[in-house]
Length: 220
Image (cartoon, rainbow, N blue to C red; front, side):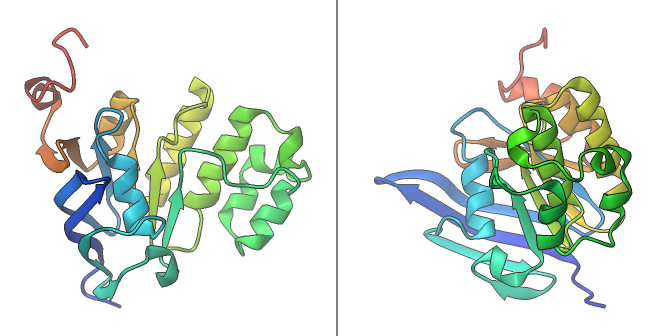
C-alpha cells in the first residue's frame, strides 16, 4: 500500500484571456477524508476541479495521486469527477451506466432506489433522480478520489440527505472533494474546509471565518 495516500495539488495557476483565475493554489485531499470548498460564483472552484481532472490545462501545476505525479487526472484511473451539468447520455439506462462503470457487483446496485429505477432510461427519469444517480455513480466508482462540483443542486431535501448518508459511508474508502453553495451541508460533511477567494484557497475553521472573509453575512 502506498504510504502517501492523498491527492496533492501544489502551485496550480490558471489564466484565461490574460486574467488570472487561479494563482498558486495548494490543496491536499487525504484518503478517507472529505474536503469542502466554498466560494462565490466565478471564484475558480469549477476551474480547479477541471484542471485536476484534466478537462482544462493549467498554466502550471504540480500534482500527485498517491505519490505518483500526473498531469491529467482522468488518465490515472484513480480520479473521478462530477461536473455541474449532467454527463450521462439520455438514451442509456441506469443498468447500462452501472455496467459501463464496471459496478455490477458494487454496493451501488443494492441501494433500494437504484433497484427501483434500474431498467429506466435517463430520458424517462426525473431530473432530481437523474442527478442523484450521477452523484452515486461517481461516489461508488472504483477510483480512489472523487470530485463533486455542486452535487446538491437539483436535488430534493430527501435526496440531499440520502446522498449525504452515502458520502459519510464512502469516506471510509476514498478521498472526496466537494464544492457547493449549500454551505451548511458542505460544512457538516467536511473534515477540512477552504474558501476560494481571489484565485487562492483560504483554510477555514468555522462559520465566523466565512463571515470575516465576507462569504457570509452575520445573519446567514
